[in-house]
Length: 140
Image (cartoon, rainbow, N blue to C red; front, side):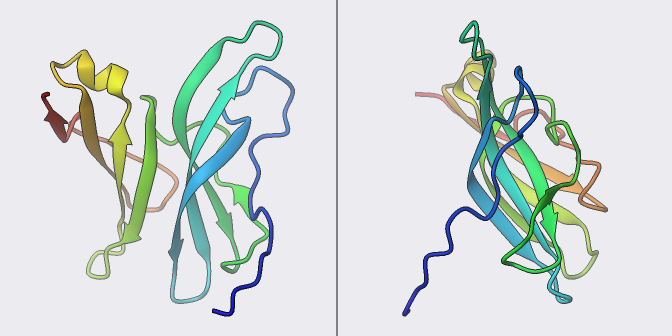
């Protein structure tokens, strides 16, 4: 410290309902040498009229500096399955981006566990891959 409160650096979508990323939280910043900052975030959304939940997905935003302003890199989640709690970094040797996430319990349970993890990767921080679908599963 001393620390200064700056408020929200990135909010979820402002599009009309339904939306997959009504709000954003649990952000994982990745600051590049030139100051460009990627912010992988956990999203959550629901349809206001029906209460239908979309689950928790990962979105990605980008800014010219760590303090914004941030804009979404793409309109959709970066991977199709429900994930949360990302940790993101850029490999110094290859320049590729990586993330470790918490795979949602429902998806992990369908594969015999209750909690799962996943590795996602990208060459350009725009197109992301997550193979295999489950990096590990904790069976309790």
